[in-house]
Amino acid sequence: MDGTVTEQQVMGGVMRLGKALATGVAEEQVPVREEELQLPQEVDELEASVEETPVAR
Image (cartoon, rainbow, N blue to C red):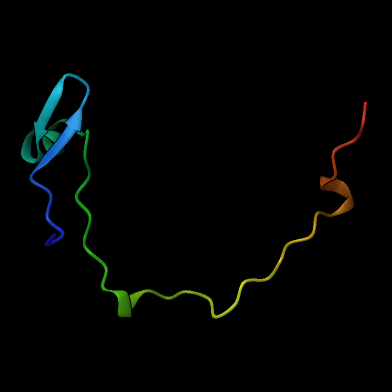
């Protein structure tokens, strides 16, 4: 797959990309290269604070 979209599945059938963009159903997105992605090196585990802990009723 080359990353281009020419048709979009919508309710009632297939919609051409030009019509989808014109009606606001689809938005044009610039493809992002993998080397341009800025991801964190590691993920920190989140702990729920006292304020976020649900109270038993």
